[in-house]
Image (cartoon, rainbow, N blue to C red):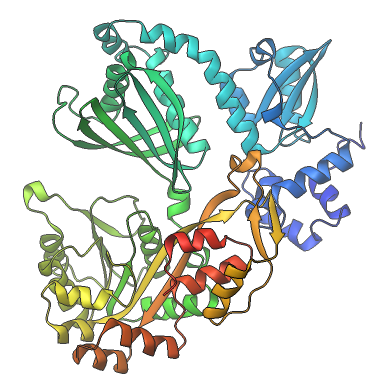
Length: 553
């Protein structure tokens, strides 16, 4: 028994999977509630797959694929869903006096003892990936709840709406909480509740891709909509106009911040729930995926005392995350930072944030004009949408302020002509803008099923045309951890245009975007496609993902 209770860190060091130095760093980094294995995976010292292989070999615990197993309902009933999610365990079946249980950490003896006391069975662990267990927990416990859902769906609409006002145990409250909790566990950015003619579809956007996970009977529509509207403090009786709201709550002992949007459609109100993940949003500059050259250039740009730095890219390309990381980097006691945003997605300590409210006349331009009377050093404008906002922001940058903002253009080089197209005087634009960063998000190759392959002729040709040497490339084979997509998580690719006197002269002489691109290429600028190909060579993403978001010009 003593031998069995060896510590995880010692096992990994003995198996030469990590070094003693890495173990010490992980022990210093991990929080009181975090498990050592999770910390090592987060730090990138090991993959979850490597962790399971060591545990399987060293402890003799069998490895299982949950997608290929059937869970017995009588075993499931022994442990509550909350306890299963809290401890990342799933009871599989009963064999005599043993309860076979899927665990990501079979060395978590506290959990094993807790389950033994709660169930009266001897707990026999089986190894499975953490994400695989979480997905299975939701799947099998949802199936149990489906009976309640079907019963609820059969009740008249008026009675259902009354049920929304009922206590915490009301079925509709549990269903909505489960939908949101599942989205958080799956790392979804949005939850779509789509009304159809005869049903309601529940879809989750994970790593930028929508996937239908569940459907409800049409008679559930009113009560689901009503419950979410009540949570977001929206008008429950208004069904003809779009509404926006926000929810701050706690689910499964985790603080949750949600943004709600409703839209009337021919089949009823469609609801989109945006999950605001403060842990991912408040990143360090070093965690944004900049390559070394772009990181140094971007850091120098935002550390200038004045000028304008623009971020460009489509909706959902991570611009806000990069802006918040830049503000966090610049946030010191000696500077006054004020932002004007629509909406304020994350609250930052020590930074004054203003929420745009067009209904009362507080537009970006009006807010920015007032901000400049507040003695700021650094100003962040959520988005430049019109000539008025652009002119005020540019004048602010010319009078000694550092201005950070976003713009919707396809590339960094195209951003300057776009400001001129808004009607801003060209001399003001070229004098104020210090640099422009364009970015996109690409899906990362799943570390648990990553495999190398030799590039095809097309891929070799693509690298050669961009002046890069092709090497071994990587793709995900597909596993239960990534939902058999081969991808897990996302990473940003960037291009960074730093203004110099030559570019300013070319812009004043109204030279074409093509000629400016030619010049910056000769100066060594790394374009989106180049940064993507470099990340593909490192095994971080795939060529398909890079070509999906970046053009090979």
